[in-house]
Each structure stands twice: as structure tokens, then as C-alpha cells.
Image 1 (tube, rainbow, N blue to C red):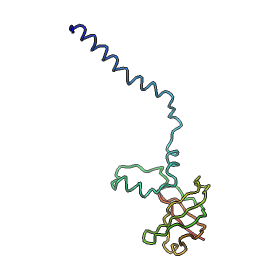
Image 2: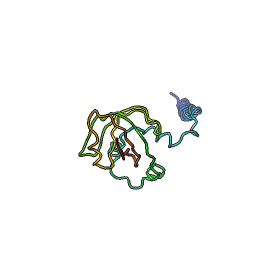
Image 3: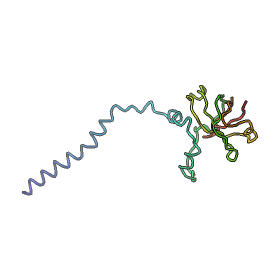
Image 4: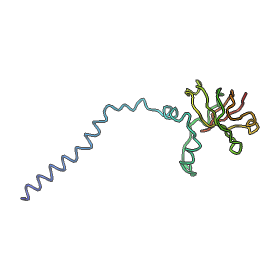
Length: 147
């Protein structure tokens, strides 16, 4: 192959390869990011056992800004009705299959709650129907009273 042909081929390749990122960027034209916000991300975490997520993230949180993550907001009391599935006295936790909780926009589901006062654990037993109140404390959902 002659030198002139190789140079021409090289120029064509450079021009072609250089346009690939532009084509990809133009393909993202339909993505509208102005409506994206962190409150939508928070909604996705509802019902998750966030203590497990904390463990996966590691222990060193230095330099992580946590403003606006709910820890500093006044805790609203939420009410639920459900059936006790498991009691963990050592961990101070109880698993409840509860109905919908409108104030949290939660559907019916089973989840594990932390109990604020371990003395409340005596009011829970497997397969017992309970009415309970809880608050969001950081990334945990903490039962404050039970009937």
C-alpha cells in the first residue's frame, strides 16, 4: 500500500472514530434530567432494611455529607396494623407482615422494625395481630408503641 493511501486511510479512521462520542451524546437528547431529584431516590428506599445497606457501604463514612437525608427532620409518627412473624429479643427487633401504611406510601409487606424500648418486646409474639406506631430515625424504622 502506498504511503499516500495509508495516510488517507488513517485520516478517515481518525475522523470516523472521533465522531462516535458525538453520536452517543446526541442519542441522549431525549433524557430530561431537570425532573430528577433526591427525593425520588429516597422513595425507592422505603421498606428496605437500611441497616444491611450500611454494612455493605463500609464503616468509614468520613467526608460524607448527610444533610437532607432525613436524620435532622422531626420524626412523624406512623401507624400500622399487622401480624408478628418473628421476634428477635437479642437484637431488639420484630418482623411484622403489615397492611398498607398511607403516611409512608407503603403497600402491604413484611419488614423488620427496631423496637425503641426492649420492654415492648413482651407485647409481641409470633402470629399475634398488633397495632403499632413507629417513627423514622435515620435509616431505621423504630416502633414506639404497640397494642
